[in-house]
Length: 136
Length: 410
Image (cartoon, rainbow over all chains, first blue to last red; front, side, top):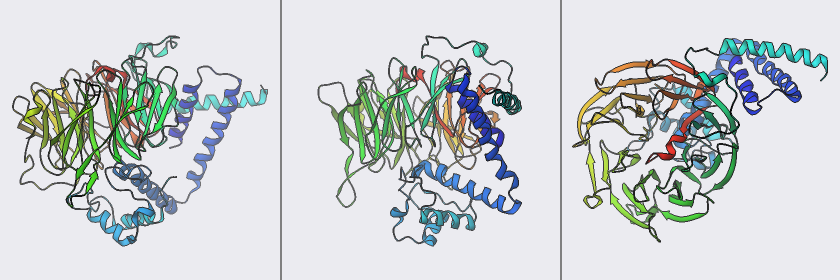
């Protein structure tokens, strides 16, 4: 993961500057410092909480990116309806979980139970209800 | 520069080079021009844009050099973003999800103009004569047409229809393409209709056609004759023959999944690009892990090729010898290549996590494939089917080369 982060930073610096000049060295040093900051927490994190955090990060990415392909990256809707807290109205976390689990017949919303555990679906429903995954 | 800082910088640079060398794969046979300095004056014929969907930016790339030339930022929500090009292939029009229409200059790598033209949109098209750019909108549903030079509004076409309770509503529009005669053609997702918008006269003319249930996307054949909409609400596709519009919309490949249990679809297929080879058309089935093959003389179903997931993109290489297929979540870490003559899968490639799009170079010697969750674009040689280069990109999605400037329907 660290390597990927670094390559992006490096690629960006190169692509935006055709030659290495004075200022670039400073930028490089700060990029390397940032690299260190990004890597360190991951290496000191405990196994259990690390796995949980990784699982939640994966689910958050799924909601924003994959659910986002129909509901929008900002969950403001697309071919599917918007899913921001103000759009979910009176739907309870359990009701949201049921929709995710079973899908909505005769629409493009598929059932997610073949791919996600009840626990994962519940976590996603909570995040949708609270708006935790909504970007501004 | 402070010598101590310079020394540490040298050290870090050495470290970075070591890291990047270990992370990068060196491929033999990469374009020879890669190491040559970039020319002062450039054409745009081998340039393109890669959408970075999460960061609201696009990369300007060069396909001969396998190189990122720069990044243009500030384009808003680019989920499901797409691009069309001005006929001089210098400017790209980027259609964002948030209703943003951004005109970018590939040479200066800057935003030339940007408007928010609706609350929620899904792509667009440029007219045959290059004068108009049209955007397909979800909210409010309809199509808006803009002057391609100034981005001033030329026409606002609400997709009005009468819903079940005889209320007038505006439908989401999808599958917007350009067609000969300076037409725009699009489908109404909620209304199940296909409309043509004639921009050739002093005033625009709209013609409405009844189509199948829930058209989700559409394409137009390379000659601009057949407009075909995929249907989510039923097995089959709606086809409009633009040479004979008086005949109305006909249904093709009806009941292709009859008697079979439909599988859940975790991402809608895309019909952009037309896979047609040897008199056969290749289209993604919906709810079945199959690529459908139809005889283009009578549009009858001739074959069904089992693939490893719900197909999203089914694209023919420019020489029509290969059909490249990408897939919906959760089987979206592979791409399958089908031989268009034998209809057999000749290779299953693994370009990375969440493969979203593929784009062939104009003459088809290479194809660029984006892998969103691997933050990577991989370039494959279409003859050897081996990777020849990789480029870093942030959550890359759509890849659009400037050769589209001169292709009908793109």
